[in-house]
Image 1 (tube, helix red, strand yellow):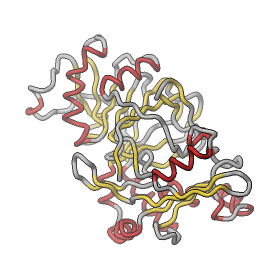
Image 2 (spheres, helix red, strand yellow; image 1 turned 135 degrees about the vertical axis):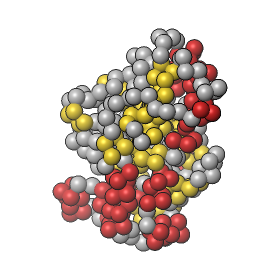
Image 3 (tube, rainbow, N blue to C red; image 1 turned 180 degrees about the vertical axis):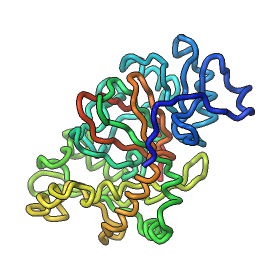
Length: 341
């Protein structure tokens, strides 16, 4: 893993950007030399966020589609409301967290907690909602409270992930796609009413039909769904191919060995909270998923959060995850834009 530190020495920026960027207002830097992801934006003067709008728009236009991630550091974002204001200034079409796969809570309007998994648990790198055929184009993370130990949000370029995965694996996934099977509730996973934000089965059924999701109400009143989705995707603006699925995260091999063995001792594989197959329903080999996980690890970029940081990612170009942590940690999330596979 490439581990970066908090050395934010100014980088050399292309001379062609000088006219578009007002350097008296904002400094552009790398977290460490030779590692362009993420680009760090820092204010040189204490002004309101609104006064930075033009320069921020210019920098996003210059860097987001090439690098894929921007870290706003030092902009005095001191509350959820200020975080929401910054995000809306850039992209007013904030999205609700629908058909989610992990537990999280709504904090304010379309601002949510990050995934509420236990602190000791590692969350693999992934693109948000890549297990569906419609996903947010942008995702923001706001550090309201940094953990005293760990709790990083590693990121990786999804274009590089695609290029580093062996051709034999890419071709098989491209041909077959990925089938995601989910069983909700029963104390093992997020209840279906939380995932679909309704207690009305008819609303769930309408959503599934419109999204091409097969569904089944089981005898115990719980829900099972399955959906075949893309393994790779083409970015609508850059036209670049990215690795874009969550097979390695949904597959039972992602669970800690003790948890996996305990689950399989009393639950049939078809009733696991979540499982991934090739799109034709055949099993995905654990060895292949381990190769994919190894690619993510080799490309991961890691940095320490500063309170008030805002990380903006192009959700198709950059994957994100979470490392284990100790102590209190509070990272909030917002999403915007929509794209379909």
